[in-house]
Image (tube, rainbow over all chains, first blue to last red):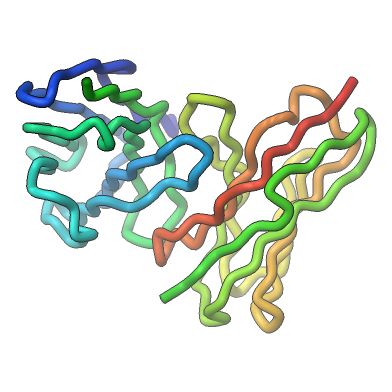
Length: 112
Length: 108
């Protein structure tokens, strides 16, 4: 099973809302990633967790707050987002950092 | 810092044609290279991963090669089909850097 699941599939939120994106994998992978992808652009790395610890933060604004409660689950908490944060948010996992990455289907986020 | 580029940005071919997609990277010490397919509005599907010690990998009609000395990887698609239409991205997983992708259209 090489499946990474993400919920919700779509999310519309106002600039004052608080919401969370969820990502789950049951492959025993110890590295998990959040990427942001704008239309017709490549995915851009946001955060990397390795063994449930934040390993990389690509200078992402604090209105995005990642959390890794256990080895299978990765959350992205959203607060006071801006319309320019509207994008496809992709989660990925790999056995270890730097190895083959497996992606989820993404959450399409629209900030009004 | 590893930079990954893909040219051309878009490619249109008739069904049945064999084709090659190109990927270039700046750091020859690349650890591995991964090719993905992305359908519009969807996530990324992993196609092939090539380790730095390998020269190529094959899966069905797909063959990917890696030439570290020239900083290039190619994805060869044999006997293209309309269902192959998608955006193809290459990435350096160790650097977590992606190329901008090549949007492929295979016309019936």
